[in-house]
Image (cartoon, rainbow, N blue to C red; front, side):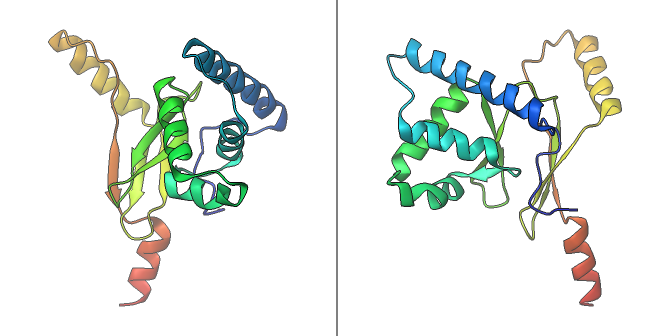
Length: 166
């Protein structure tokens, strides 16, 4: 398994990704226009980097990769905030407490297994757990807006390494 590929529930084929990318750009451009802003070169480059990633990215990951293009930390921070406000991205809290971001648009609901040793984030889906949560909400007359499930522990690689070291 490729350790860098964390985004399991993401369009895999080239044609699906191309259409997905077009929708992302259209929605972000519309969001910016509604707020009196435009898709600048730095914002476009940040979005391109994000769309090309196959793992959850931190602000530092993006800044480190793009600073050679003159993109500052504040621009990365503000762009991530805008992308999150228009619901194109979502964040997962990593082991350091700092957010790591993933594309959110049109991706099925999923939860995260987060390794406390290496920081890897693995996406998982649990239909049975979702059914239990939905049933409990109905029983209490609760109308959920969203939920997030994050389980912290050791990934298979780190567990193997730790066992081998004993």
